[in-house]
Length: 116
Image 1: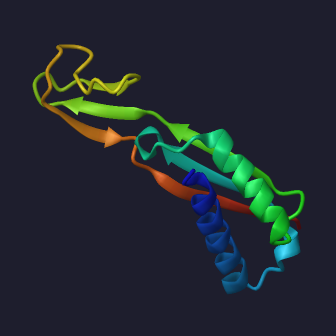
Image 2: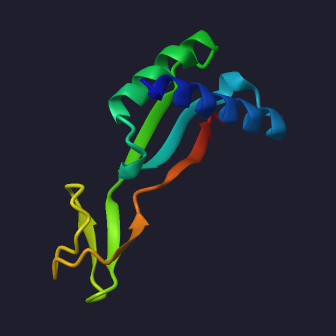
Image 3: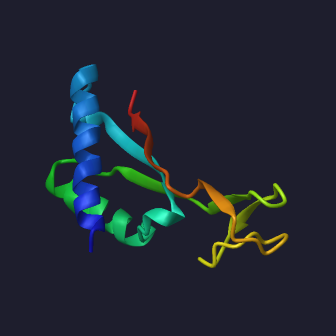
């Protein structure tokens, strides 16, 4: 389960940012992330890993949020942009396989929330 190593890395990023900004770690209340479908991360597993590792590292009562981005493609044939549910990687409008992936690869810590 690679979600545990991802959780560890996310918490390292959070800790580093808090330190850089001179903010006490105990003030952390939330971490929001955006993760694309192509990253093949199971959000529930990542959230579980963040909670377990976070508790061990002293991040107590932190709310972790994962916003999952769909796989989006643009068709070179007809120009349509669509979201792909199944990994068929065909244009949903014309069926062409000449597509370009334009979304779904995101993996971003969007925000770190702290208690005022």
